[in-house]
Length: 360
Image (tube, rainbow, N blue to C red; front, top):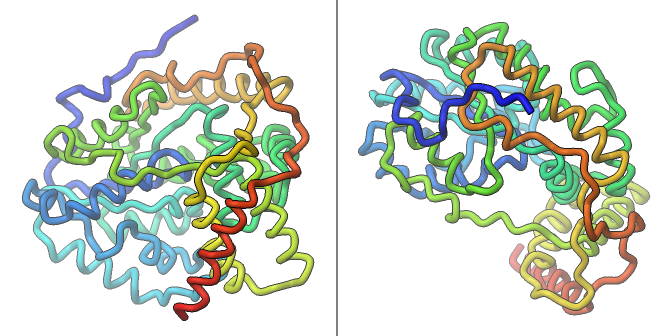
């Protein structure tokens, strides 16, 4: 198997030039929350090392929603002045390096990307994206879409739609995953406004959870270990708990209940209760990608590695760690979703919902 040249995540020569603004675009389910929480919780410490993490929240969700003119469903529109104020804050602070981080930027169109670069400074902006193994990413992305994006497709149906679509050109619902995760679209959007050497792609290593945060520490000139990825564990739900949320999304759609209600009850309370509930004998893991889905995932994985190898952008980490192999998966769970769930899990979810309602 041919191996591609790499720059190690632990290389000492990753440091960005003084004055650089590092725009981190995710995408979703590639470890963004851990990085954002580390920067947020240590704002003063990182600033002491010359790194400005602007704003007050743990991520720049509202600021980027303001720039893009849209945000999560069920959330009030953010006025355009929020982005203007954010840009002013960045330019007013004399820092060696600045970080802007929002997974929402992974779905930004060419006009939004162009404005961001112009507003922040065409000579200062660097963009970074984390590339994760597709077979590990797909189950995480499906679960996250159910929890936060009103998804109603079963896991198998989701895989059917995603893996039969063309990542570069597909439109409509089958393309919803690729809008954020298509490497072709990312390179086209940012390559139109930035030189290749200021586009950075980090190859995630599933075996080394410290590798990705180590890259950001070296890009920003921070001490090793400062961006500890364990500060925000992003625990997953088991398959039957995700299925409950998926079915509730269907119920919301069937009744036409407003998105703000769904966000307050399902996303704001029930999901947290299901996460907090302890393990039970009814727990079932989301099955791995297998069969024809795995074969297609392996094909797409190989194409993504080939594309990055020939793109001339700055690749950090071993791309072979992102390669999916078309092999039989032992112990694959049945394709049919589970139909039972722990009573304790449901009780905890309802308790969380009622406590949230009582606090309003």
